[in-house]
Image (cartoon, rainbow, N blue to C red):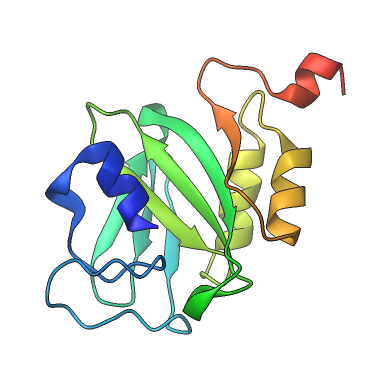
Length: 147
C-alpha cells in the first residue's frame, strides 16, 4: 500500500512494512490486527500507524481517493482507502477498514463532490482491482450517468 504512495512521491516514504509486503527500513513488520487510528480534523486527516509513524493529507491538497480490497496475504479480505495528495505536497495516507474512525473517514470522503459511491461500495465488498472513486476536478461515472 505504501509502495503505491512511494511510487507517486518518491523514496521519502520508506519507513514501514506495508500491507503489500514491501519492506522499508529495518522497522518491525506491522501486524495486520494492530490498531490504526484515523484522526479527522477540519483541515486534514492524520493516520497513526501501529509502528508509531503517521501519515497525513490536508483536505485542500487531496487529489485522488482510491479504494483497494486485498485478496491475499496477511491483509486478505481487508479494504483500504488510499488518499493521495498533490505531488507537490508529497502527502498521502492509507487507511484499513478496521482502523478506528474508518466509518467517519468514509463518510467524509463520500461527501466529496463527484465521489462515486457505487464504485466505492462495490470495491469495499469484493476483492478486485483498485478503484478510483474520486479525483479533484472530475465528476464520477455515476454523475455522468445522471445517478
